Length: 251
Length: 153
Length: 106
Image (cartoon, rainbow over all chains, first blue to last red):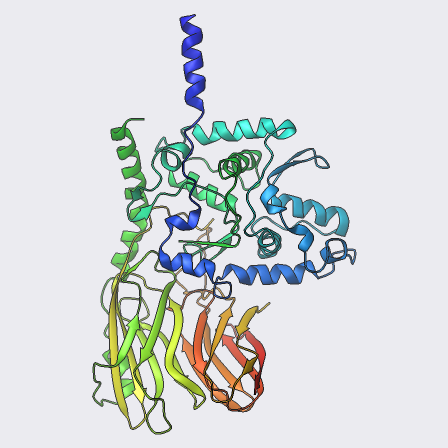
């Protein structure tokens, strides 16, 4: 009985305390960075969105364009980014927006895979994600996605690296405080792909997550790996209701 | 998690992250002598320290992209106008940042851009006016080190 | 793949000042950066840029490595007549770029 009580206690400790109220990423950025994101002309991420629009209307390997099926203005893509990552029945696994675009390209255009983080992959992802700007994150964590969601939560609370820190220690327990001069955010994935001043380029959420693992001196899971997809799903669930901002700007 | 444990761990994160930045600033810390660059513009004529506003955030979160607005109080009339702006950051590895040359169609002596600042420093702008006159303005900017840096991966 | 954006009000009243905004996709390599395999990335910046309205030179600029990646520039003009506003630039590798917008003076 005592053993069971102790076990139940440990299980409760597994569920991290979520941030309240939810605050999107820009609230932890300087006024200048916020203004840059809000300026649709000067936001450098819009260069990738514009490039993605060109690729959307350009023929793939078999001559078919994204625009042929989904429309030239991509209005049909509205809300798609807000629902990713999701369990894709046709692929039989959890996939993020980048992976979904790849699958579509190879299946319907016969196009060779774009490397993750390549300028073209980022441009297409930014273009599609931009269509969901302002819409609330609405991922599904039930049914076939449940297992990945729970794996993502385990990763989120697991201590890793030489610094022996878990995501939850900074982003649930200490958001709003500072590390050197930087405010600690709540760790919401709503602005990605985002233009990061540190990178001087647009980059994916998985690149950002890998940087976090690097920061605590931990082994970095590969971009597109099951681990990062699961973690992304857990993060999206934490951010449920916050608006998609892509392309965001971060310091 | 105890507060002490967190502080120790987070301190490690911050200190570890700060190291490369500190090493970098040592390499580029010396103020470069920009007098020859200025002399090439002015030809040795005097520069008055007035009427040039150099707008920069007093504290920049990331030196890779700092918003800069330059404004010169000038009527921009046919006979009294700003013809050129020269921007210098004397603690950058290369102090020359940019130069702008205005044609007669330019309506205001104003430019907005974004610049790189390697470390905390003074940004200096020299404005050339008609009649061989020169004005200057400057602003000091603090550039903070990033806590959450990563390798270019 | 020189991608750029140029923004200016398409219709302007005679004598009115309008803002011209420019954003160019370019890494503005400083020459101080290294690839993960240790190779130095050579310096390559957009070193000069010129903006013309018809045959009139509006603005010329020279950039060093102190200009941020994906350079942004804004300035104000009074267009004397309708025409095509053209911005052209070249980088250290000799790659040229061009972007244009039409202004109608009414």
